[in-house]
Image (cartoon, rainbow, N blue to C red):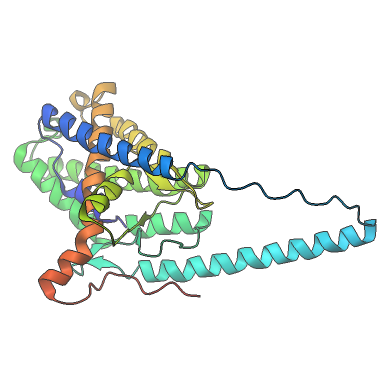
Length: 294
């Protein structure tokens, strides 16, 4: 996968001016932060306190039986949840934009079952090895070759090969850390939950906000540490293979913020693509997943 925001980040050339990148980052991330703060304020009202349960002491044998039954029931619920998530993942892995660009990390199911650690890694792996990712890396390497981006790589086949490897490594690193390792450790959902309704303005703000605000495995929403930290980790790792003149803390931070901002633009594409598809082709977008299995 990369969902469209990753595809946008992969295809877009990063050798745009520092001033433009800084402005783009500030505008998009500030909008995201404001929307996230608004969403937090709306959900800040605490739920009513449940009445205290009467404390009773069960006989040892009865307590043991109750504990065993509860454990069995919880295990059955977890198994059913994993099976539901697996079915939803199978539907997601059929999603493509224009029949080519993978859109595996997007769901229209707002109450989609949380993914297990294994499912998060599977989704990241499936995204990283998709043929489109290799094609996108080749296109980006070609652009870099033509514009002499990362000049330290040189020209010719050797220079193109280095640019190709760097482009794919950037993408794979971002997926591995931002969509698998950190979501598992932080218990966050790496998917984009498409709003699909409401005013255009609200949908724009929502899609941008998901770059820094995400759904947790327990159903709550909070800061998207996985995405942002994943971009910084990926940027740091790139110092291992970028030419010496393209390394350093300042370039790493600048690159990570730029990729985060590009992700916001990609999220806009994911949010509105089905609407654009209906307008262009006068039919329902094939990438939209089937209804959630019961």
